Image (tube, rainbow, N blue to C red; front, side):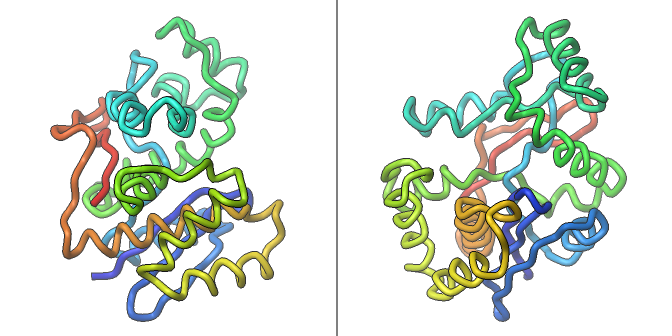
Length: 234
């Protein structure tokens, strides 16, 4: 079974696989991204899948915040509700969000809305991908790799290095990937935390073959388009 982890980055998407032939790719083209989803049998991706119609916060996001704790809850944001997904501007998305939920859409959520929209479109057009492309979250993966604790925030050098070490304990090539990607791409294309997050997702996807998959919540609901709203982990 072919597995991969994908995280969003400024250039598009960063994909890492730790299969028999480990590799990384930067997917700048929408078609390359779509092709990659079909290429792998299991993809852990750090991007919301499944959207509420009227509730501001998905159950999986709130439960994940509770799991991570107050210091790290800010790493989990509420994606746009479905009525706001195709709004042409942040102002209009905000209006849609406030009309239904009485809360405004965060700038962070709006900045990745084009990526959410693309993934939502692909999964809507290709239902066969819904069982192989699974939403996950790097901070939950790091917490589990570190025995249930998170060591400093990833926007610090110590926090980033610690997260990299957690992955490299299982995949030695992770250190090489981190160095090579930093040398090959500029920071305005791929940031350091994008690299580490994508490798954590790749590791979890690979481990899930033998360890199985758990979800938050245990019995995930589906949205109005039939997409499961859940955070997947091992």
